[in-house]
Each structure stands twice: as structure tokens, then as C-alpha cells.
Length: 427
Image (cartoon, rainbow, N blue to C red; front, top):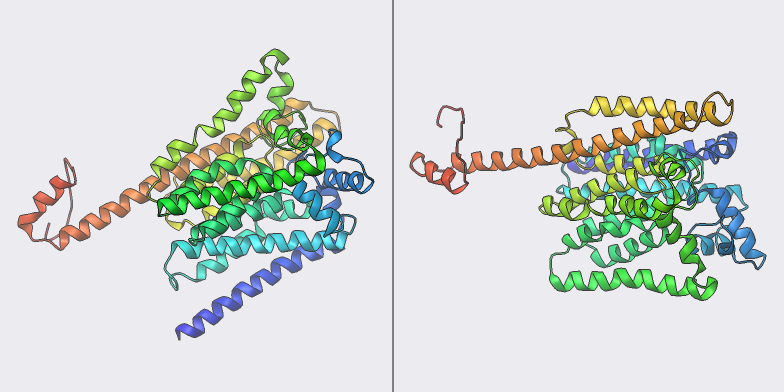
């Protein structure tokens, strides 16, 4: 009976993966939606746009350093991938790559869930997580836009699934590569190290992580000199391209005076870094929760966010049902996300297409989006803390129930409980 249930679950997962692949391939092949989505500021940024990637590959194949201009900002890893292995001019091959990346992300999310629960318990949730990952509209549209953030997120999810499964060395390599392509995942390193049990294991993981950064960096420097650093990591840190996106940065640095720019660049970047230590310390009992919260912070407050970053965070949240069940305002969060998903393209059109609005219209929508995402992160933090307290109280009640009445007062005093009110026939 148990074997039949497992086979049924596996069939459901394969059917879900097949449905997600067929949907994406049909939209790529039969509609003009992908070409239209490549221009949407909600889905692509100057660092992830497929048009920029195509231009960089074209320049490289014509013996021109693509990093000499101000157009190409993608990692040299992507430049090598699409110059030698995947023809960037082939719609079929690129569509297959992005579909495969989305399918792999869904599998990695299900593996993260399995690492948190005993094998065989609530296996049906794997199918739900795969479906949520594949049919999340933010992730689906980002895939159709051929944004390289889809590839970045696949690397990140693979790293998280490996560290959650105890494969810390592989996770170190993948996190290093993820940091090489989008920089901000380096802030997840403390939480990754917390999942390593032994000091020697952490030391080796650090060595592997920095090797995965240094070796590709040396190879890139030998091919493109150090100019690639300024155009990739430097663009993430200095934000030279102020093309509108769903983040908080572009409008602020458009309006600010130049002599204040460096100061506020430091403030905005430190605003992200400052969350790492307190979040890791607060959730040291479960570093995966720290990774979840930090992924939400990065997806909301990094310099060039897209809706694909929110999709990854939402998929990770599905791996924590105890947190989802303790959320205070899930309906409000979902409603505002629906509200902003309508407002963002509408106000962008009013601003740049019809000319009946201005930049303040679109920025107001991005502020609502950012505020809602920030409140959702706060709600998740509170829900995680409530779930932790409920779990501890439940364990304490079960422990007290096993003791005789004479030893219960001493037990509660040892737990530093000032007032405990329990109801029951025997307490």
C-alpha cells in the first residue's frame, strides 16, 4: 500500500513537470509573448536582459571586448556558455535551456522540502511545491522573458538544496558560482556555514566557496582584463544604469544630487548587509529559515530586483508549512501583490507609451510593491517565531505530562516560566 502511494506521488510529480514544460514550450513556440516580455522592466533589468546578453555575445564573437562599453553587464560565465555551448541566436535552444532551468528549480524546491521532513511524511506536498514553482506567474513570465535571473535563481536553489541535504562542499561550489553571477548570494554564506556541523567541515566549505569565486575570476581576468569587474560586480554596487525596475534604487538615485551619491550608495548597500547577523543569530536553531528570510530581503532590496526574485522567495516559503500556517496577513499580502501586478504595467504604459503620466506614477507602484514585500518578510519572521514558541510549549507540555505532579513545579521553574496557565483534568 505504501509503495503504491509512493508510485502514485511520483507519477503526479512527473505529470506536473511535464505540464509545466509543455506550457512553456507552447508559449515559446506559438505566441509572440516572449519577445514582448523581454522589454518589460518588471521582469528584466540591465543586468539580466536577454537583449544585452545577445549583444555581448555578438561583440565577443567579432573580437571585441563586450565589457568595454556600458551595455553588457552579465557574468563571463554566461558569456562563455552562450558563446560556445548554447547558440544565443537560436530561439529553440535558448527556450529549451530556460524551460530546463525552471524544471530544475522546481525539483530543487521539492528537495529542500524533503530535507526538512522525514522521508515518507507528507510526500504529497512535493507535488504541490512542484506545481507552485512551475505555475507561479512571476516565475513563468520571467522564464518566457529569457531573463538570466531565471538561471541565477536555479543556481541559488541548487546550492540551497545541496546544503540542506548535507552536501556542504557541493553547496560551497554552487554558492560561489551563484555569487559570481549575481554577487548578493554571498550574504547567505553565514547561514550556509551554520548548517555545517563540524569546524573542519566549515573550513573546507569556506575554501571550496572562495575557490569557486577565485578560479572563474582569474579566468575572466585573463580573457577580459579587470574591466569585467567594473561592468558586473561594479554595476551591482555602483548602480550606474538607472533604467526603471521594480526596486527602490533607480528613482532615488535619479533625483539625488551627485555629491550625495556615494554616501547613499553606502547606506543602501549596508541596509541589506545589516540584516545578515541578527537574522542568522535569531534563527540559529534552523538556518534554513535564516536563508528564507535573507532571500526575501535580497529579492526586495537589492539594486536590480525583478519579479523572478519574488517568485523564488515564494517557492522557498512553501517549504515551511509551519510558517505559512502562522502568518497573520496572508490575504492582504496576496491581494496587494495582485494589485501591484496590475498597477506596474499600467502606470509604466501611462508614463512611457501614452505620455499621460510621469515617473512618479511608476515609482509609486514600485514603492507599494516594495512595502508589501517588506511587510511580508516581517510577517514571515513573526510567524517563524510563533511556530518556534508553539513547538517548545508543545514539547514542554508533553514532558510535564510524563512527570508526576510532585516534579512539575520544579520543571517549570527550571524553564524560567513565571506564570504558566494550563487547562486539563490532570494539571
